[in-house]
Length: 368
Image (cartoon, rainbow, N blue to C red; front, top):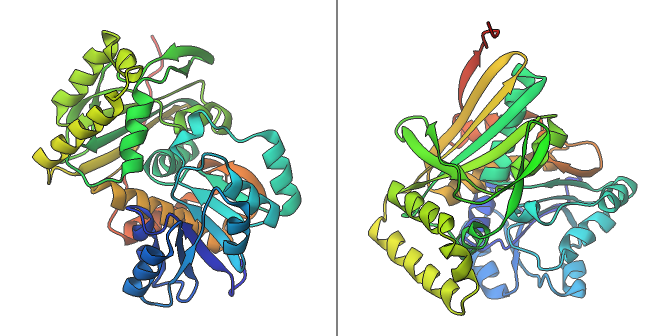
């Protein structure tokens, strides 16, 4: 990336985007650009942040708007869902570096054609920044480096309903609850449903033991490919705990699926979440815990903090810096665990107060 090229944050005045901009602006003066469909809030945030941050209009449904906004840009960070991946394809065509907060990688997987085009143009795309995928992906990479060859990866995420999060995060959870998907167990795919198969998970202090449920986070889809894991799955725990138990019961009884087919159910669910968020305001812990089992034992690594939007932005900014500093050299379409160096990534998290807690690999006793 040239010293003169900008870092464009699309959705830059959103809940996570503005935090990414604030993280990057001090170290990249005059090069951070916040963009969105409306110029006024982008320009206002740019003025609030100072340090030469710019505001720019960009409509992700308009190819001409995208092309105009990409002039002078070297790195793109997308913080919004793209109904059609026009922005992603434009970044590939221009040979740019690109990352996104893309929870929908479960259903919108990158294609071989995209990888080939990126390799030809020189584009470096790292899909999935934030908490999971993102920080969870890099914890899995760290574990694989210590205990590989990898047999099993289990990623666990705790979120709090009283936290401050944007409408995209709320919509994602509501959409994914009713989504059938598959997990890989012992090398074979089998069907799974969100909020099924509860398990006891010991999160680090101050959270402690919680019940977590299967959930279709995107990181688990790729660990068999990127890390060679024969088994890979992800779980979600909620605070307060009763909410997870309730959702699990609704899924088991088929009520969640039925609600998804009824008009107005989505709006009623969003109103309920808004009331719960108000009631539990201040309970805003999150935690990412990844366990990797391999030939060398079992690795447990975690990152815990308050405010999931802050955590997601810190992870995304750390990954963006890897792209901006040229640490990701190979062109193509990648997942973070494939190409991002874990050392600098976790140093950047620690500089923001997110110090990873890593347990030394526990040696597995041979069967008797």
